[in-house]
Image 1: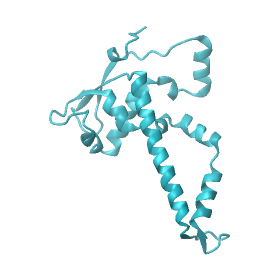
Image 2 (image 1 turned 135 degrees about the vertical axis):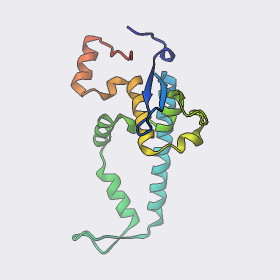
Image 3 (image 1 turned 90 degrees about the horizontal axis):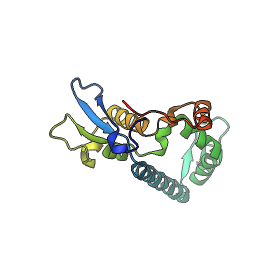
Length: 172
């Protein structure tokens, strides 16, 4: 078994589409994962508030759907969209894509110890916000896989591990 200290679990990974460049990532501690989850929750709450504000404008929305009236109130469109999403659908989406529960930039800021870009600080949010989408997604995915490998298992595999009291190894 590896070290129980998350800071001791590290891995060097290549940066996609940038030959010769790499990043040293670490397994995140629970407090880091909680910070990334909280950041994502804040973003979701803000988006929900924006949807509700849009709903309250009650501006007409054009519809090209054959059975829909030519214009519908914004409130009606938003209410229908919110009513169509169930808690089970949200849970299923999170199971199929664990990254939906975590803020990518927070994962990278907490999980990248260093990289081969000498003039760029991996802890600087402005630098991280400048990453292209592919690199951002790749780094955050690799960090989350190192920290929470069970999230990427099929439900039956994760259940079998829990039942047997097994732990996934995160050693490189």
